[in-house]
Structures are given as C-alpha cells and as structure tokens.
Image (cartoon, rainbow, N blue to C red; front, side, top):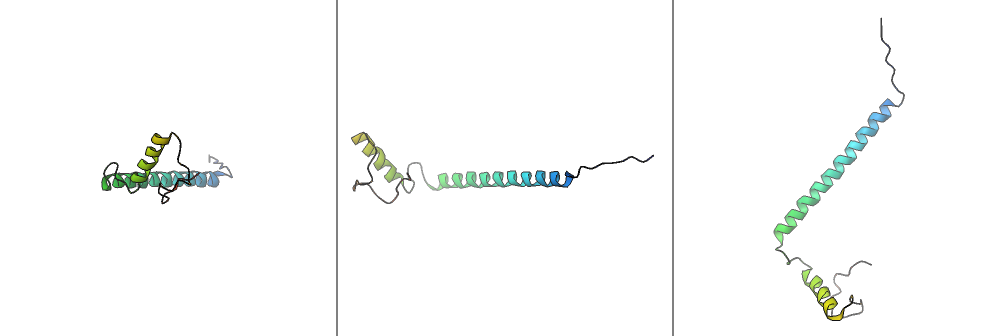
Length: 86
C-alpha cells in the first residue's frame, strides 16, 4: 500500500522565509562582531582619556561646571570642530 504525502503549497516559501531569516541573523551577528573588534582595537590604540576629541569633551564639562548650563553654540571660546547633533 502506498502512502500519500501531501505538501503544503506554501512549503517552498516557508523554507525560503526561514533561510532569509537565518541570513538576516547571521548578518546582524557579523556586524555586531565587527563592531566589538573595532571597539577593542580602538581601546587598545588610544589610552583612556586620550581619544582624539577628549579635550573637547573636557571643555564642555568644565563649562557646565563653571556656568551651570550647557554651552551655547554662540560661545566662541569652545571649539567648533565637533558640534554635537541636536
């Protein structure tokens, strides 16, 4: 006696969806791994508090400490090289 095997008409689409979902997760994990490696290399290349814009960060913190407010963009004594985004 032969057995009948019924396949859902959506079976190939389900397999494709699982494959695409798996690829998306692998891409996310790959990007996460790249960012972790990049962060580790960055922290090894620059000693703590010696990054390329730490002086600017310190100037902003000093301004807040002295004036009790965030610096205005019109303040000329602060550098304009690295503006924070609004």
